[in-house]
Amino acid sequence: MYSVRVEADFAAAHFLSHYHGKCENLHGHNYRVRAWARGESLSDGGMLLDFGVLKKCLREACAGLDHTNLNDKGIFANDPSAERIAKYIFDQTKALLPPEAAGLLHAVDVYETPTSMARYKPDK
Image (cartoon, rainbow, N blue to C red; front, side, top):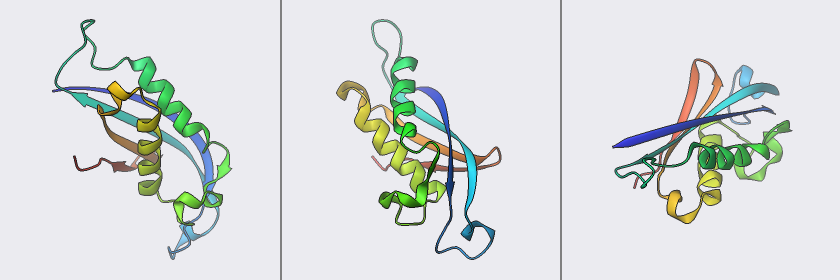
Protein backbone atom coordinates (compact mmCIF):
# COMPACT_ATOMS: atom_id res chain seq x y z
CA MET A 1 0.00 0.00 0.00
CA TYR A 2 1.31 3.44 -0.94
CA SER A 3 0.51 6.68 0.87
CA VAL A 4 1.17 10.32 0.06
CA ARG A 5 0.49 13.35 2.23
CA VAL A 6 0.30 17.08 1.57
CA GLU A 7 -0.25 20.01 3.91
CA ALA A 8 -2.03 23.35 3.88
CA ASP A 9 -2.94 25.88 6.54
CA PHE A 10 -5.45 28.58 7.30
CA ALA A 11 -6.28 30.96 10.13
CA ALA A 12 -9.81 31.24 11.49
CA ALA A 13 -11.86 32.13 14.54
CA HIS A 14 -14.57 30.04 16.16
CA PHE A 15 -16.38 29.20 19.35
CA LEU A 16 -18.17 26.05 20.46
CA SER A 17 -21.75 26.76 21.45
CA HIS A 18 -22.35 23.45 23.21
CA TYR A 19 -19.07 23.33 25.08
CA HIS A 20 -18.74 24.61 28.63
CA GLY A 21 -15.25 25.95 29.19
CA LYS A 22 -12.85 28.39 27.63
CA CYS A 23 -13.58 27.18 24.07
CA GLU A 24 -17.13 28.54 24.30
CA ASN A 25 -15.56 31.99 23.93
CA LEU A 26 -14.57 33.38 20.55
CA HIS A 27 -10.93 32.49 19.84
CA GLY A 28 -8.73 31.63 16.88
CA HIS A 29 -6.31 29.06 15.58
CA ASN A 30 -3.67 28.78 12.92
CA TYR A 31 -4.91 25.46 11.58
CA ARG A 32 -2.58 22.94 9.94
CA VAL A 33 -4.31 20.48 7.60
CA ARG A 34 -2.91 17.24 6.22
CA ALA A 35 -4.57 15.26 3.44
CA TRP A 36 -3.65 11.63 2.92
CA ALA A 37 -4.10 9.62 -0.26
CA ARG A 38 -3.69 5.87 -0.30
CA GLY A 39 -3.67 3.17 -2.98
CA GLU A 40 -2.18 -0.08 -4.13
CA SER A 41 -1.00 0.82 -7.62
CA LEU A 42 1.16 3.48 -9.20
CA SER A 43 0.82 5.29 -12.50
CA ASP A 44 3.16 4.55 -15.38
CA GLY A 45 5.25 7.44 -14.05
CA GLY A 46 5.62 5.71 -10.68
CA MET A 47 3.28 7.98 -8.70
CA LEU A 48 0.21 7.22 -6.65
CA LEU A 49 -1.09 10.79 -7.05
CA ASP A 50 0.72 13.93 -8.13
CA PHE A 51 1.54 15.97 -5.00
CA GLY A 52 0.71 19.16 -6.91
CA VAL A 53 -2.81 17.99 -7.78
CA LEU A 54 -3.61 16.94 -4.22
CA LYS A 55 -2.06 20.10 -2.73
CA LYS A 56 -4.00 22.38 -5.10
CA CYS A 57 -7.32 20.74 -4.20
CA LEU A 58 -6.56 20.82 -0.47
CA ARG A 59 -5.58 24.50 -0.61
CA GLU A 60 -8.78 25.33 -2.50
CA ALA A 61 -10.83 23.47 0.11
CA CYS A 62 -9.18 25.47 2.90
CA ALA A 63 -9.32 28.84 1.12
CA GLY A 64 -12.98 29.42 1.92
CA LEU A 65 -12.25 29.01 5.64
CA ASP A 66 -9.23 31.29 5.85
CA HIS A 67 -9.67 34.47 7.93
CA THR A 68 -13.33 33.76 8.70
CA ASN A 69 -15.44 33.14 11.76
CA LEU A 70 -16.26 29.47 11.23
CA ASN A 71 -19.48 29.87 13.20
CA ASP A 72 -20.82 31.93 10.30
CA LYS A 73 -20.72 28.83 8.09
CA GLY A 74 -23.97 26.90 8.50
CA ILE A 75 -22.30 23.61 7.64
CA PHE A 76 -20.79 23.50 11.13
CA ALA A 77 -24.12 23.91 12.98
CA ASN A 78 -22.57 26.65 15.16
CA ASP A 79 -20.11 24.15 16.65
CA PRO A 80 -17.11 24.15 14.29
CA SER A 81 -15.11 21.47 16.07
CA ALA A 82 -11.89 20.14 14.58
CA GLU A 83 -13.77 16.93 13.78
CA ARG A 84 -16.41 18.76 11.74
CA ILE A 85 -13.77 20.87 10.02
CA ALA A 86 -11.86 17.71 9.04
CA LYS A 87 -14.96 16.15 7.46
CA TYR A 88 -15.80 19.37 5.62
CA ILE A 89 -12.28 19.64 4.19
CA PHE A 90 -12.26 15.95 3.25
CA ASP A 91 -15.55 16.31 1.37
CA GLN A 92 -14.46 19.52 -0.37
CA THR A 93 -11.06 18.12 -1.35
CA LYS A 94 -12.60 14.91 -2.70
CA ALA A 95 -15.07 16.92 -4.80
CA LEU A 96 -12.22 18.99 -6.28
CA LEU A 97 -10.02 16.03 -7.20
CA PRO A 98 -10.21 14.58 -10.72
CA PRO A 99 -12.65 11.62 -10.78
CA GLU A 100 -9.86 9.09 -11.24
CA ALA A 101 -8.09 10.39 -8.11
CA ALA A 102 -11.05 11.08 -5.79
CA GLY A 103 -11.17 7.48 -4.57
CA LEU A 104 -7.56 7.70 -3.39
CA LEU A 105 -8.31 10.33 -0.73
CA HIS A 106 -7.94 8.43 2.52
CA ALA A 107 -8.06 10.87 5.44
CA VAL A 108 -7.80 14.50 6.50
CA ASP A 109 -6.14 15.64 9.72
CA VAL A 110 -6.88 19.06 11.21
CA TYR A 111 -4.49 20.42 13.83
CA GLU A 112 -5.74 23.23 16.06
CA THR A 113 -2.37 23.25 17.80
CA PRO A 114 0.83 21.27 17.21
CA THR A 115 -0.36 18.74 19.81
CA SER A 116 -4.14 18.59 19.18
CA MET A 117 -5.49 16.98 16.02
CA ALA A 118 -8.75 15.48 14.72
CA ARG A 119 -8.94 13.08 11.78
CA TYR A 120 -11.77 12.28 9.41
CA LYS A 121 -11.51 9.00 7.54
CA PRO A 122 -14.70 7.58 6.05
CA ASP A 123 -15.57 3.91 6.36
CA LYS A 124 -15.17 2.47 2.90
